[in-house]
Length: 210
Image (cartoon, rainbow, N blue to C red; front, top):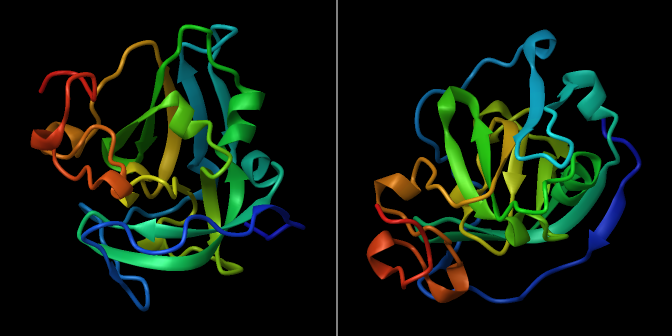
């Protein structure tokens, strides 16, 4: 993916570290499973489920690369307790995808799908935040394969597991459903400022029953 002229969304977010976090210099590689091989001719980004028009919306790699490019400066907070501060993320805002492929009025949540069937659920309001971005670049450079190339979701106000690497699509949902780590004991919402790390911390209404 080339880097088109960018549109900055916002310069910075909340300063400081969430509770229990430590500042990290550099960017550790953390993920579950192997790094997938990228084949541009086979790559497709899909929006499906409860769309407003009832149709599935798809972009191939060339089409997705041509979507409006934006940058944000934002922190990344990993549930393993490291935080990377002040990174510049470049890519396609999640809000752009919502505008191009609107959800039905009854949609409350999304499931973000990645390679190997990995998934992460989000409330629609979190996904629709002007801080959420499908990143292709970090600090002006293309993401490496280990860090999610060609596409990873960054949702700065949630723990980083809510932003999968190697994203392939978004499913609109009319009820909440737990994703990969949420089914394995992680908090259904994942707000680092409230230190919502694990499912045993959930309050009534935070998520569906395990």
